[in-house]
Length: 320
Image (cartoon, rainbow, N blue to C red; front, side, top):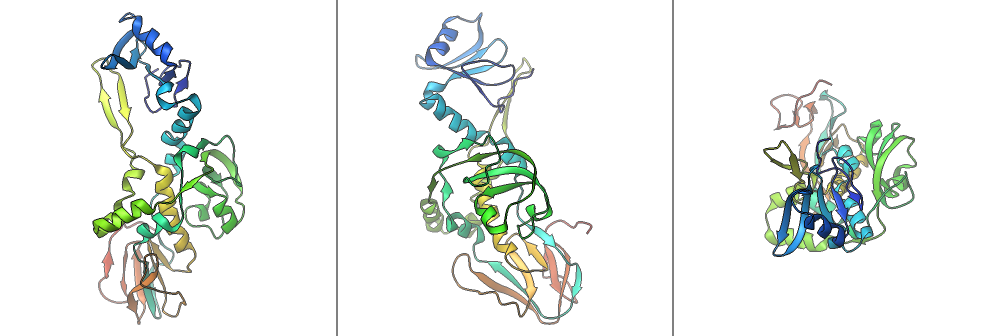
């Protein structure tokens, strides 16, 4: 079996194709056995850090993480395969296409992703655990295949595989009908993100408020290929689909709370008389455009006055 550096590691045992973590003594014994027992051995000074066995399994010591439980928590945080599989980007939807008669207005959230960073605290990574079952009453994030979920943001609204934050979204939208539980994580402690938010604000570059979380959603690994054919992969630096999802989902929940013809990432198109409070603060709605004679929506990212060229043209044109 080809070695997969992203596979779930074993602890105090070996399995084909998977990384292994052993005690410090077992790692030293493996290194002392010499080249007949291994292909490569890494050292920092005189300290053995990693050994590649003849069968290409990469062996390290769990002692570097403190204890086996500490390592298991780190694995839960770093692998998150099912969380990655369920992650999707911003909400882009035109529920009605063509000309919509009557006055309309475009609203967007001021610095939506900056608002999402501190709207709620973030899970504390040391308290992470791999979920063993669907646990709707515990704080966590689960990849589930569900029936259409009325009131919930897209994509959960339409049903199918999606991520559900528990118990927050259960409280907001009721209990979904879960067809299949695909995996997840739970946590029991939280941390405020105010220090990161203050740093972003101090830098003063508006684009950072939109893009700071992009590295958390990164999935492209760095691949190292050896002459033997073995390939190893390093996860993207900062990869954190849990926090990436929480940021995006907080914005989607704001959009779901508004009755709209059109939703695009952090903006909505609504009737002009829609009673939606606006304000000057981060996370407040603001009016960015008004269409007294109606609005034409071609596809998500493309809209404008009822007649004439569009005011905004972005996104990807899709057949309705």
